[in-house]
Amino acid sequence: MKVDQAAEEDDEEEEDEDEEDGEVKEKKEKEVEKERKLKESKKKHAHCATAKELSAITHFNSTRFAGFEKDKDLRPWDMSSNSELRIKKFFKNEADKLAVHNWTFLSRTYPKGTRFDSSNYSPMDSWAMGCQITALNYQTGDLPMFVNTGKFLDNGLSGYLLKPPSLLPPPSLGVKEGKAKQASTAVLPLNVTMKVISGWQLPKTSGTTKGDVIDPYIDVKVVGLEADYAHVKTKTVGNNGYNPVWNEEMNFTIGKPDIAVIFIQVWDEDKLSANDFIAYSAIPVTSLRSGYRSVQLYNSKFEALPDSSLLVHINTTTTTNKSVTVSARSNLAKSK
Ligand SMILES: [Ca+2]
Ligand SMILES: [Ca+2]
Image 1 (tube, rainbow, N blue to C red):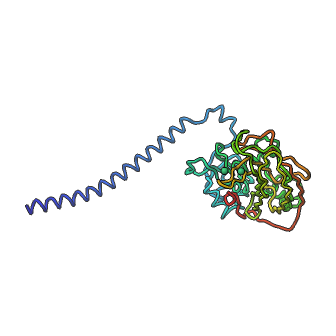
Image 2: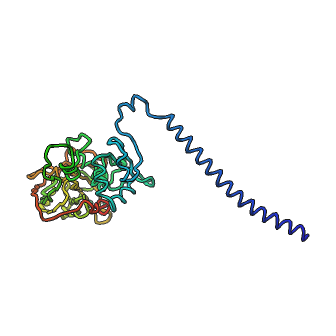
């Protein structure tokens, strides 16, 4: 019995050791398997390489971002991809370095993998550092996408924008232009006075002609660098979606106008339930023109509402009263 027990204990010890050995073995096997799969996937990808014809007309070469010190090894058409998380870190610690990197090289930003609900991150950090492509989940009608659609209204809806002067290298560092010009990268802050006068044929909550008459108010945000963040609302006009009049003036001083977007929303105030989103318009600050303006409104699917508009009066003047650094945080997340 004793012997058997001892033998059993020995066996158990051996089993423990075996188990340990087994664990190590299993771990190694898993690692080998992982490596095999990785090789296989690489092989597969190599096998599925882009068609030669497509490759011949594709100018951008995807490359892994290997640190700014490796910039010297890159070619201008090499494009690195960074998730929104890495962009956030860059923005916090190395915003200027990435902006300078993007003078010469291409980089794109994509949503983090855990956005299972297809929500979006603020594109502002990426834009503010001059990243050339900032990918968003286009299927989602949320604030970042509204701002994105507004941003690209500029340049005749061509789908791309030229970099604003503040994100370009100073002429003395750029292409040879003979003698260096004075650095023209400083952007003057802009004072914007906007009078929200009235609305015209605002849709109902449901987007149809049925349902209660709305009680509209206008919500205006300046979305850009954090220092430029502003949020103002008008009073509510009760029971009038047809031609509500507010006549309310708001003032903004925007330090980096070439990055900021004015985000205007129409909401229906409700006493017994949450207020309802009615329509929006997002306008790049540098596209604002002084004078009386009719503002086109859009629904949450980014569709223009042909009969609905706001009448505003805008006055913009440059100022030197406020300076903002590139590394100031952007405010889109905060403004949600
Ligand atoms: Ca209402
Ligand atoms: Ca409601």
